[in-house]
Amino acid sequence: GASVAVTTGAFPVAIGFAGQILNSSAGTQTNVNCDVDGTLELGTVGLNIDIPSANNAYNGSFVNQTAALTAASHTFTLQWSVDAGTGTISCNSTSSCNFWAHEIR
Image (cartoon, rainbow, N blue to C red; front, side, top):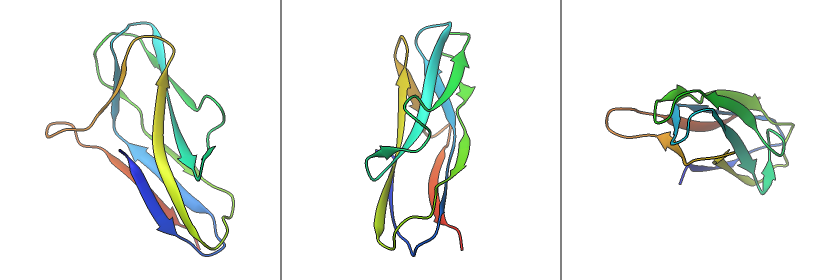
């Protein structure tokens, strides 16, 4: 899965995803989010991305900054959900994507 572990000082962390998302159903929403140590960073739903056409790739990219975290190891996990259909993050040999976490000092 898309998960990154980072050991930090007591500083915020910039997190981001750059990539495409698809949904098997037109007229739906796919939501992207980041779980930080068991807590959703972008709220309960996350960032809503409208999918007007089925099975077409749309930009699912986002960047966010956490509050200052404790000095310890933290796990950042990319998550997504859909309100209908099947959502897919498109990461393959023809469609690259990046998920990252970087401590800000």
